[in-house]
Image (cartoon, rainbow, N blue to C red; front, side, top):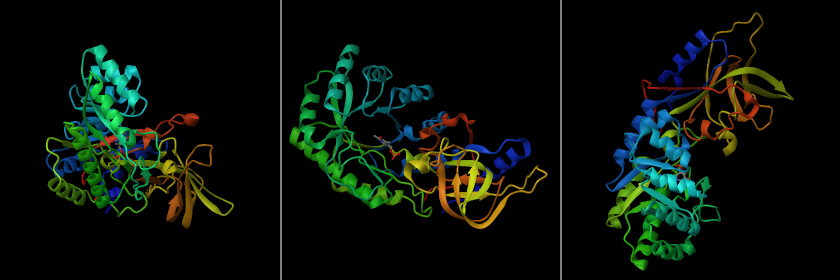
Length: 409
Ligand SMILES: *Cc1c(COP(=O)(O)O)cnc(C)c1O
């Protein structure tokens, strides 16, 4: 069950803001204790020979990386910029460097910064990686990213099973293996399969891992490979529409444990690289209602903020869940606008009709000056948004340890 703001010390942050400042509330607030405890629990509950990496694209803020660095096994980076950000936090934390379209300079610098593994996304990339490694006189350790041909109907975003730009088509894997083995400065250490995103079904996820292990075992036997890693990606889900629905992590890890016991792959470590599932729940987006209006019979709440801070609901086309934090302060000599028992569209301050964070939300009472607190804003929130569109001031980012950490399960 989702906690309310009252449990979190967010109320006192908002109250202090309203006491001390004139401008409307606009902030991302992160519960670092929730992040720490949640990540530690995920790591602790994994079966033996499994390692948890954080896919930092979900939230690359330095305090988040610093918080997770002592807990997770390593980080998954998708650009050289991300690799550098990790190296600012830790000189030696293991890094997996992936992403389509790696440039020569990125490959070279990643090797110089001592990444543990590179994900090769194409045959050309295998050649590029070996070429750069040769110039540096090193051997690059590589996983082949596979784009599987099976279909996975139940997840919201699927990255394989249908044509996508990611990875190497499963039918080309024999050729990729042959090429990887022929390249002198490259060591083929395993496979990477990230085929699913925002999946809420733990047993489906365990079945997916079984499919991965099956495939890897086949390639291993057919080509006589000695492998060290199977990276099974991320994609553990968060329900943005039904807050009571959570990914059953304990169920997933026990299914995974049974699968590993039933079909051991000796010498192979399993890697996981979730982003959303680790970082979503620790983050809140707090934004003040600056106007209320009724146009053509539809009620609108206008926010000090919007999709330039928090593009997630627009990107996913959903109504993002929020709670109303009532604020009593009203400094003006004129009446305070208020609606009661209506359905509102929650819109941002941008001059585009797309700037909507939630639609058709029934509210008991909403006043200008109240604060909306959006949940699950810790992953793919600020980082995916077009911050400078319209040149409004950026929100504040507050990282704090709260008292009663909520937990997404
Ligand atoms: C984005 C991404 C992840 C993280 O995905 P989540 O859905 O946030 O868990 C992991 N691996 C790869 C290759 C990715 O592109």
